[in-house]
Length: 232
Image 1: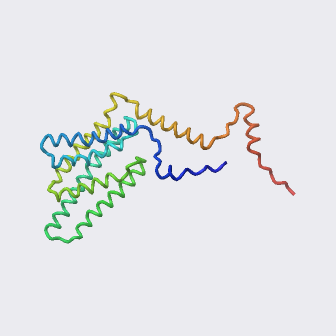
Image 2: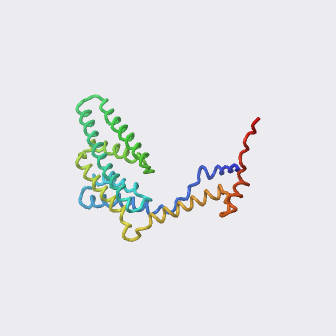
Image 3: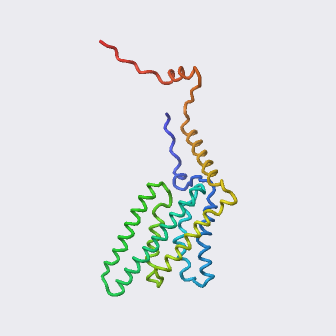
């Protein structure tokens, strides 16, 4: 088999692989974040409305999946995001109160330990379930952001409530295309799989043997049989 020629350095460094249309995913993520934030601003909670972004992160985990699976993945990811937002806010409030009262600076290690446990568990689960990108990055980012909010005067209840609002928005927006185009994710996945298979076939063409009686003879010609050693 010939060795494939390496790709040019320009395409390796600056090239972007073709993954089909990505603008619908971008629009869904933007709407899932903006919708609860705009509602919060309209209700007079502009200071904490952006906290809904922590729960809206879950919308990206449902991209590329069929709707019958997407709602489960987004629901589980949304519940995890809300839980981690509450955990991060609670630990951040504890560390902030302890350091403000004149406690040791080592209280900050509690937050470091929490983030370490979160990223380890989330990385294991994401790799085990093969959820793909963005992996354990967004759960870790949720803990990090929520832990800094109590120092700004945002309570743990407010962080959890707004994160839950963002989670509901993520679930609704991710399933919004079910009524208009219910088979779009499945069709896009099949099309991408076909493109990848055609690309592999062009790079590594396989030898096709005829069917019927001539198949055995063709295989014998292509793959010679091993000779048995002669007995002395």
